[in-house]
Image (cartoon, rainbow, N blue to C red; front, side, top):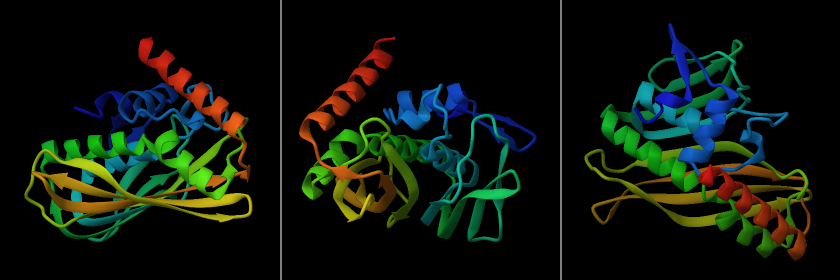
Length: 235
């Protein structure tokens, strides 16, 4: 139900249009990364949509690692393939775009999977500016304001308890490792239910084209980002 508007499926073949991918990013994840704009030249299907769709179709295991090794372009047909009990793949054009390793018990409660997916994509959408901006200030670097590049690389989710309801996700800590013009960012989070930690996870992504931090330029980028968000929400 949650994901139904954001993809098409026929005979096991999935596809996501530009409009569907953009609407998912903006309406569910509150994510206004330019790569997910309908008219983006390098439009890619959001990694969080592939994550959520995998959980919906394959269930959620006690421990899962998603590695985004290729991009899924708009309207490309892709499949979800189980390669043994501990390996899944999103296959697009006969090549894996996402590799998933899993282990442990598999939870198939559709309502709980939907709740976890929604909480995760909402949390993931807070990356910029709330989490990323302080990290860049800390290291005195910033992305190219004219072409900010933030690329999802991998994520891990681990459940310590498989019997819970009404989950929420909170930030645990964030890290950045800058090497020249690139920065590797890790965002750690906890999964909570009934006041206790029932799981944890980590989101990893790359920011490129880094340069010396300029407060005015970043302020303008954030202002434009927030204005784009406000315009979408008002439409």
